[in-house]
Image (cartoon, rainbow, N blue to C red; front, side, top):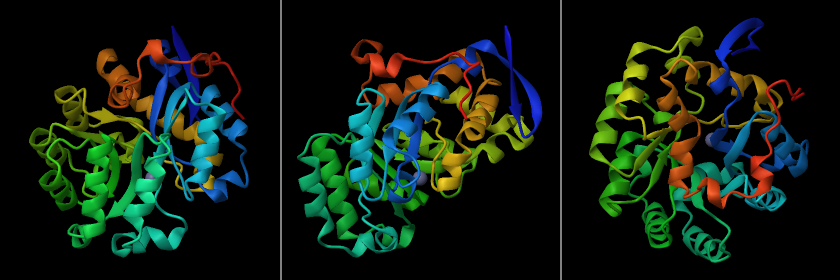
Length: 288
Ligand SMILES: [Zn+2]
């Protein structure tokens, strides 16, 4: 069976299994600017009607992520965002008060990871960054990092088995470089959000990314990355773009990238799922 979806105004045929299958979105944000337009209930409806069974969510400030999590605790995997305002996104590596705030937040027990941390090579020796990695290691929590390859090397100098989600396949998303890092660091997971155009130029998956996914099928996760309000407004189309290239992979590989790798990373089994995450409307559901 095939489903017809509309992508950039074109009708596209997808195998039924993947166009309708569950997704685990590994990279969403629910910031104050998004919360002003979409209530937690509306966000959860958006996820449900797009077949997103689980989603990793962070936000600025973190209180909005907590509200979303309380709305659907089985669907939302909350990451502790450490920015209170856009200024913090630049200033945090020099903010000596940050580790204590993170430590206090982690003690509330709801957070399943820390991030997204934006950090470039020049800040990689920041004592604040080192302390955050130590806290993550101590609490056994993954860290979502948007940063340079050298930052990843620094994390693994600090904590050799730390789970890291490398957002957007890093700042230099070349398949050979990504393969090198996956080989070097077994606890590294690569997030493919907002790299659709590189992975599948004009919608067709490129040979080098295809081969990379087949070679390391259990090391990648997908995500939309709602970095702006417009991204939430265009959410359905962004999900369709990801589903379109996923459907070009061998079924077993696609399922791992679409859902199972992220589920394994966060220790989510079908058994542990609550009914609110299982309710998935059919693909004919109108999301808008
Ligand atoms: Zn992001």
